[in-house]
Length: 538
Image (tube, rainbow, N blue to C red; front, top):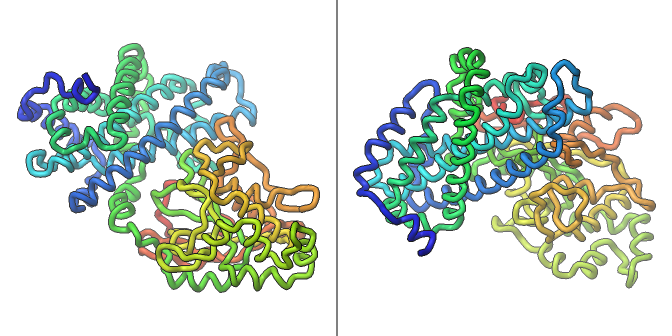
């Protein structure tokens, strides 16, 4: 019997699902557990809705991988969690604990965004819209079981430890943590209504099989994985609740009484939650930075500039702390590249030493990387020249203005290096182009690269290159480089004679206004301190 046939075995009539669906809907209206209504995704036509659901399912799978990796990291450092609370944590221990919690928090919020986006499936009639109802349930319950399995596991390790709870609950903007983040985490992971939703959803899943078949969901990519993940996570969560449920609830009772009066859902701030549908549906293809602003900014930019970028709710580095999630290397068009480098005497002298004595940097790139040069001299899907090298989920890619600069926030910094050094960095970047994205954030491997890793390795100092001295940081025990650290470095060195980066521009998004403003170096210096999920800029 196939896994699909096994899933269909013993299917009751669809009408018998009504009592469980009613129970779920009742829970959805409970103030302590229900998120604000998010209708936008269900307003999409059916094809667009299914496409969005499949995209979000792929994101959920990625988040699950990240959470499992963090759980393994916690196991390796379990001793610090079991340390006597009368013994103060060292600075290194605090850094480990905070960076790990920040990564967990990041994943929890990201999964919760998916859950809340599809929460209103309970209001979509199954008989009239089977695909929307089925996919909505799968994503809602898949997200919930993920949150509870990993949340309860983390809660069991951390709750009831006063020194640790105080540390985790304090605001830490440099890690992207708002005040009382841990209290809101407890509100979600250890709330009786949320746990009841787990049981209700598990029961409803068993009675929803005919609808899943009718919707064609069972054979869709990743759905078999999701069903197995639901089963596994539900087993883990129920096991923790059975073994430790009473203890966990008792430890959290006092805080929950206060927390739920202020926040009825975890852990997205109320103003942010009200925008969630907009940022994923209405604003798809409508970033806060206009095309005119991006074109104007191009006039200030030079090859070799470092760009940091952010799209609200489209984080490229989930699990890495801080407001800025993404970094890029600006190289300009082939014509700009040639105009900037080919007449520079130092660059020409260096190029003359390369195989074949190509005579100019652009000729060297064309000879050394013919396929890459052919791609770079083409156009993007919007008909724009390619100007940027960045590591995205598709891999290290050449991109244009619409992808690399039409975002919600954009900062540009210029390395205080010679054109020769920048030319060397761009050649290195060409070497990396085409390699896969590094979903494991392993800075010690060159075979896959995350976005900041591309910038870091392109400008890394060597015997014949001063480069940029950008220190790595520890995140959950792993040495890596969140994009936020690039802005932190700029701020730390600002105004010094030996500073490594100069300010070029900052386009600061305004979510409430639906646009972006040009801001100064002072605002940019502060930007890395913003909490990652607080996107309501005044």
